[in-house]
Length: 405
Image (cartoon, rainbow, N blue to C red):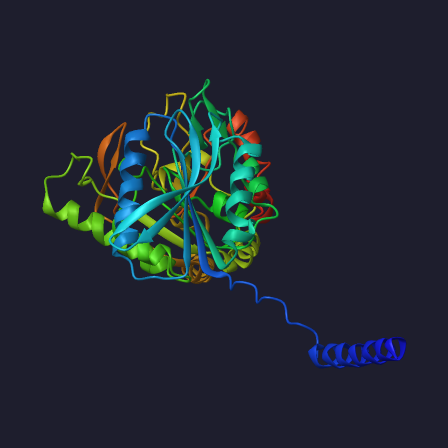
């Protein structure tokens, strides 16, 4: 009897557990956890300020914090690369209640913030890291600047300056290489001198929708970040951002005596221009088509064109940044100029200037009749600068060989 009972009990348990297993099987495959939605926007504010501008950069970082605290824009990552001399870090500014905190993303130690590999590394940390994936991206580059001119022709500033170990600068072609492989940018804004030149804008056309900068020297204090930040964090708001920038400095300019400034309120004027890069290739083609074969001598052309560069022409740092609209008006007949001007106007999304701007070399100067975009006109066709200019993309695209340059 004991053996029969045991066999029967075993059979009963087998049937019971088999039925339980069948009931527990899932109907279909288990759905994986839903991935986090990307942020609406990631903006990188890149302070290459290991130079004499470091105190202003530190102030602008605090302004950015105040702007973020006052902003109602949500779903964003505001990343800030901070090189004020000494140890360098990448942080995220995070709004928490009634305060803004600094979340350290990465510490780099001492480094050359205008080096190609170093800059590309930071751009990758900010723009390609999964934690900062977004629907749109933007870049603010803050430092010294000197347009398209390559280092070291002549002894000017170029893009960025790092004086941590020696004196290092970045060429435009090198800056372009740092953007390769990065997401397309809503805007690139250079908070640096002389950067609104057609040569720079054209070189950046494939990497950004809007290019923002000043054709002349910029306020040492930098942009009013506490005021422009909400627009900076909003996709498609480049024109609004530029207008807030201008309105701020116009108010300072109109409210006090010209010719001086403080670290709080720059009262010596400012100018800002935004270009739509989608228009630049057709504008280059039209320029090449319309340029005459027998043009004015470069000396005559320079005399007829406004010069944003107020440094001494005899100094080693002089480049010459001439108003592009003035230059084309001097080169073209009335009908061709009207055709060109229509295309030019279509590329300019925003341009505004106070009646006067300030030069660290020449003091206050009039901005009357300016159009906001500079163009190089060589002083000598045999100079190192002219030779370097022939290597720019713009020289080829705009057909400047027709002028004998």
